[in-house]
Image 1 (cartoon, rainbow, N blue to C red):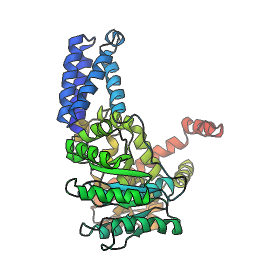
Image 2: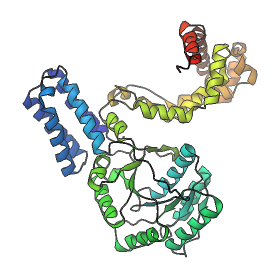
Image 3: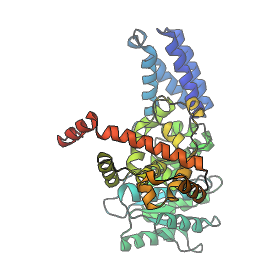
Image 4: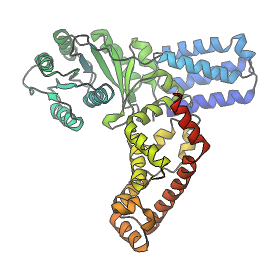
Length: 447
């Protein structure tokens, strides 16, 4: 995962500082030297590191910090604030045209993940804003680029505008905007061609597309795994095209994270989105404060809440609450809860967003994602009556269910035991003072 090594090193520095209690100037200077090395090893731009360490050192050596009862915690706060500022301070939103359709042009080098980013962005805008995007195949050079975009469009149910590989990308972009106006699509997302390196022909073509359709956003897709090279690429593209923002791809890979910490400072352009996984739903708006918290091991509860809100259906949640109150919670409901958790992403990734949960803790957590699939298979192998009344499941039924789900009778027994424990817990909650208190508060409008 991104920043894993950097996070470990910074957290180690602060742990040692906390162990010292009161700090002197030498303690802080030694700590800042370690911070500097950790950032350089993470492939952060040298000038960015120099400025960052200078700012943190000046603030950390202040009288208030040195005399504080918790100096190490104060320094962690300073580093957190400076990291947040380094990555842009706050979430930068997309700029939409007042006169639709808005046009978003995605550019970058070949292999940066541009075409996939187009699909991910389209899906995000459908889900988060209810938009009707149009994907446009302007990459006529890379073999199968048009087909790849069409396949992505089918997967997310978003139309793709393509005119083949014999028409110029400038004309394709122009006609796509006209098509969007007639068919009510907004925004228009242009998938442009990349090259293996920056060249004049690539830049000239992108400039011509820019002149022809006047995009509201020129988003540069940067491969986070290329580290410092990604920042150099961003600088070049920005000089020639004046990009409006950056999409960081492959931030979930085995990357040192230097690009995320340098690109904003070097180009002056905000990171608007980051791709945190391979699935099309894994593109997230980039929040500098949340990323800083994750790097420093403080968790990312806000993103966890966002994921929960996205995955959990409000109407179903209300129905479930009513069932729990009436003690009608059955195995169908049990299955639904697992499926909603699965939508949120891998369990270890979710645990990593909790404050105080570091990499070493997660190494000892045995979360077998296959077990969730086994639970689904077992419940789906039951009859409707069995799911509603698990008490009727005797020995012969357990054998049939185990065979039908490709599991063992022990697995069926274990699931039924877990369900029974959950039912008991829910009975206690349904009749508890806390539940009644929450009900009262809800009526009063507190919740």
